[in-house]
Image 1 (cartoon, helix red, strand yellow):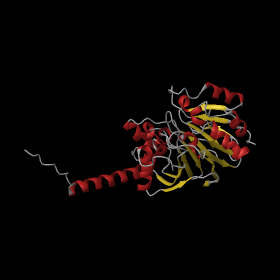
Image 2 (cartoon, one colour):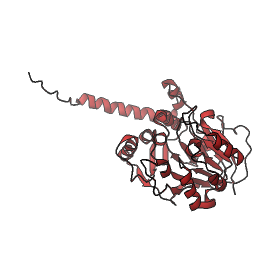
Image 3 (tube, one colour):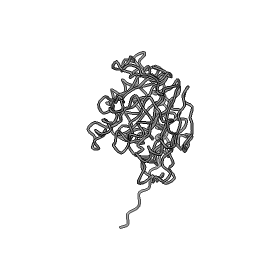
Image 4 (cartoon, rainbow, N blue to C red):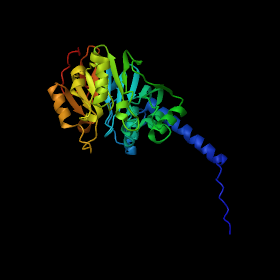
Length: 339
């Protein structure tokens, strides 16, 4: 007896209407929470996420308004996600691990971030782009800044999902080149180096990392993604003292394959933040890197031990850690501007 193939069920008119109604209701609920959360008995995002059991470790909207600019290092486990806020403008560099996608979106929404002027991918590793599709789906993004992906498989995996979501949301995409500058509030985000030209995106993706510097007056923040020593050497060779910074995101989660003495000598950071997971399998940050930071007089903070870290910067080059109550961090004195 020949079995008849089951025909796919077509959606009914009632089903389509139900989906549309649900979408409208969700959009309306999101608007109400944005506009009136915490008032008239309506929950805010933080309370809502607590009810849903989504873990939260996020700055408040008030914290992002301290100083002339803030740099927030989200605790996304063994990954990277850094938010720069300057005036009304925001830029998210990388989006953490897939496991942290929901909590990252929740943290951004709780901090009052509804749109991003820039979403930057330093390189297409899962611990940097794992939450990027979710960010594109839930926030309005003006521009997606990408590394050179010409040798990468852009049609599959998480990278494919990111690019597909960006296309669906009609987000402008830009492939970054060394020297590109993006205005951010009163400051500027500059691409110092767009990876090593001979680095293979499949086998050597770390060295395709965008090396970025945000500057506002005498305050500067340097983010080299997962660039390893070879790319750090190329960065210094190209930029020299142009890598000088007040604040440095430790390269490759504090790995000994990055954070070379050459780069630290030229960058001369006052403060470094290591973004890594608690008790991670890689041993990040490596002891020799922490020793190197200490020998160079660099104060170190870690997301694995402290959770999300927020640094407030002033145009005169001074900085301070920002605590949960919006006050100064733990008594760190503001430092002189970087030379």
